[in-house]
Amino acid sequence: MKFIYTVIAIIAALGLCPITAKITDLDRTQDIVTVQMANGHRYAFCGCEDYVVGDYVSAIVWNGGTKNDATDDIIVSVHYAGYSDYGE
Image (cartoon, rainbow, N blue to C red; front, side, top):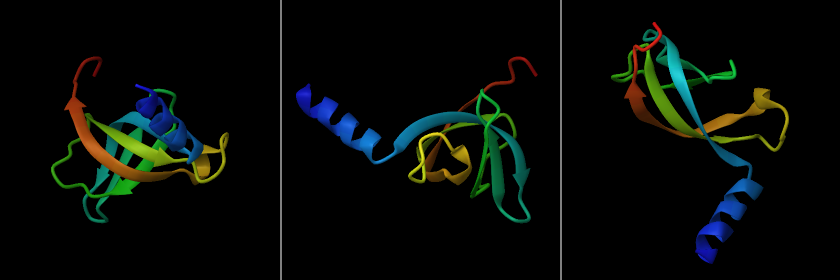
């Protein structure tokens, strides 16, 4: 268990954190996916693939070396996390 805590501490020290966000827009011409977190913050990444608006993705984000400025965050990896039409 101590190993897991050590790994988590290292990841946090590197500025990596997980997010989950809902896909709000797909630009298939430019291959850009726009997602929005529950707090309203938006990210964009390339790779529309099989995504549809309403899908959820989980991602690992690097904070760009700043803790309180999300404008320089970079998505390191992204994975499909599900779909919900609840509240639509």
